[in-house]
Length: 304
Ligand SMILES: Cc1ncc(COP(=O)(O)O)c(C=O)c1O
Image (cartoon, rainbow, N blue to C red):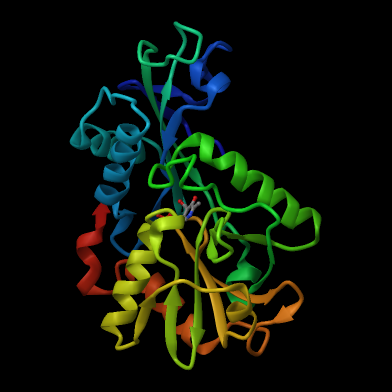
């Protein structure tokens, strides 16, 4: 990880190496914390955060769901992220990681009296699934782990605890020689990747699962909006694993993953085994949006 100069912690910019916590930090022990992953791109007009308001809203919604009272408002959190990017000098695209967590002070599962802390870090980060993956597609394995069930976890929250499952699925996929995991829901329908939403293309139609078993993804929403504007038919419906195997194209979307083609799932070649034409079209258009080259989507950019 490439260090930046400072990290925003509870209202102050702290030198990167001094942004530390106590070992009895509540979230470290019991896993109640919420976070975001947001990207800022180097546009022709300078660094711009993509969909800052939507990410910050989701952060506060996650806190509400998990019964954490944010000490900062939406505007304060947005300004903190802007200030952090202004005060650090970044030469390339940036990933922003706000985290609301429970600090040091009490132990035990009744968390309500724990102090609430906020940290926001940002660092230069390239493509999550690799530049080769963006161009040529990745190999994916359907995970033996089901996506966290809505009967026992709250998937609308981007909650720290939800990511144990994602980590195990990712680990399993990588150890098995694949690049990403695709998780089914507890009824066996496609849910999402370990940190991305999933799409297939069949007969020119773009299909993605509903969000009852996936994060309400900001990139997925952007890609759907973009696809509809470009005249594609988009279906938000359940997908079975065998439908994935016979899809013409497949791809992941996410803030980190951007638009990453999938060329193989469980040893079945998807389409031609490379980035398909619809995926390539949407990927190009997505990059135009985040780099400020599409006037219709400029309102999603916050210039630093
Ligand atoms: C489990 C999961 N699903 C989907 C996504 C994609 O969400 P977004 O597009 O808002 O980054 C993410 C990433 O945040 C994720 O962690």
